[in-house]
Length: 335
Image 1 (tube, one colour):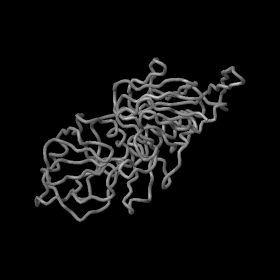
Image 2 (cartoon, one colour):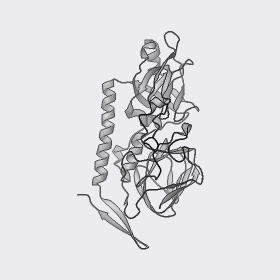
Image 3 (cartoon, rainbow, N blue to C red):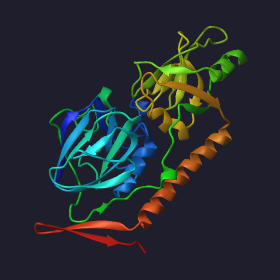
Image 4 (cartoon, rainbow, N blue to C red):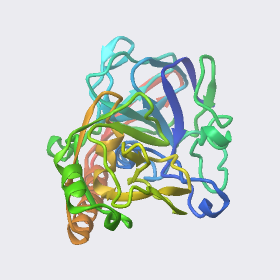
């Protein structure tokens, strides 16, 4: 069976899919890929279902060697990936042969890259998902980030894999540090002046930013009565809490299931991928949109994924067929 052997785990590399849902009432967050769009595209590029698990590689430093053959795709951040020393461009698939070495050497743009393999990783689902939730030590590879020497089996069937598929350049997302939000459930606890301050200000991600949430530094916000505490209620990704110190916190994939601070706004679903690609020290600003505009942006993102899936399925494929010790390349056009 083919497998991936970790040479260097990098800063923080975990196995993620689109998350586990239905367990927040038990205190378990969805987790899943921070940039769900990039994860889905990487899976489509290697012929997987959109929700198959992939590696979420945070920052540079990850490297691995492959045993056996498979197809891989890299999407999301450009972390200067190389295959046997040769530069690889993201947002396309590549054929992997036995002994190939993959490295992510330095950040060019973004912060989180996604590595999918044809067939997916051969790991069990926990509560319906392969996603890693490190704080509870569940999912992924023993519930933790990857370490040097880890070996992960691949489900890839090595006889036939397609190769060299890429998505059109105009469909590659442009990540932005200016994200759209709708007003939050407790926005009425802030004066018009404070809300205007929020939308006109620029914040920076602090070093205390991770998969649970982004702590921001910038102009502080104060609730009307100076009371930022509320009865704890449900939390979702993108919700922006304002604790007593006035510095906003943006909830991310491993967010707590409930929160007890006022929420001034919520980042729209279509802009969560842009949030995912920010790193500590980056600037962040917010733009108010209506619920209708948020829904339109979400539907546009889903339509883009549908169009990409159709494009990839129709694109001519190059198949590698191994017979004995010889590898034959065959080009097949879709009907």
